[in-house]
Amino acid sequence: MALFYQCRFDAYQKIVCYCLDMLSSTLVGQLDLANKALKRYAIGIEGNKSNMTSVTTPETIKVACSSCNLRELCMPISFGADDMKRLDEVVATRHHVKQGELLFRDGEPFKSLFAIRTGFFKTSVSTPEGHEQVTGFQMAGEIIGLDGIVTDQHSCNAVALEDAEVCVMPFANVEALSREFPVLQRHVHKIMSREIVRENSMMLLIGNMRSEERLAAFLLNLVQRLHARGFSQSEIVLRMSREEIGSYLGMKLETVSRAFSKFSDEGIIEVKQRYVSILNAPALKKIVNPTGCV
Image 1 (tube, rainbow, N blue to C red):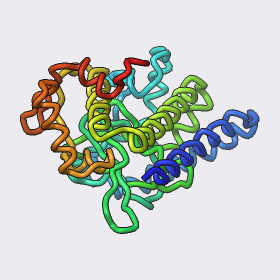
Image 2: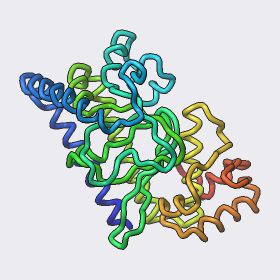
Image 3: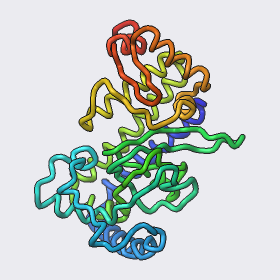
Image 4: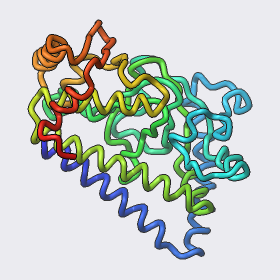
């Protein structure tokens, strides 16, 4: 398991190196790449039309970043009104994904990043034994699809845990506009860096924490991310199953259930099927960090 996450960490390091190479390119090289990227984008849009079965016309599905209430979460907050109008060019379409459907699959050619407008996703890979290994959970305001940048193909499956909607951002278009707006490029780098930190934290969870500490850290992280989107600091609706949580945390289903029951018996949380209320957040934090050190 630790080797698996180390490989994932190495992959994200390659992404950062890729971005640094982009920054060090000469202006002439940048303009040439931008022109090529725009051509690939135009071709890509035509090629993608046949895959977007739920799409009607560009006019009815066009998404304006400037009017999106999640733009502060997935786009630079320092953009002015005029810049935001240009940023609207990044988004090609809005795509609906039904619960259980794949947004992209392992081995599929990488063409776009996806900003989640509504809904929850999980990413997973298949082990050599054929079992599913959950590698992450993504929610509204987060960007998914970064795994495909290094090799130009996706290295995991992305499945909707509920009916969802994403903004499709062709990567060629993101590249071209990033060279025009350095603040956008820095923002993309921050997103990639955040993924590296998340992968590194996951390695720590798997390698050094007991089962109860893993679940406590998972719940605290989840409620923190939801609170940043305007939701309650103490109420969670788990879109993922106990089995999926166990796969992500490296725990058996029975162990996950026992940990939930223990927290409930101790008055730390209240569980009603998929609804979880955090009754004693300090106690939950103490499980993760018993020494009180930051």
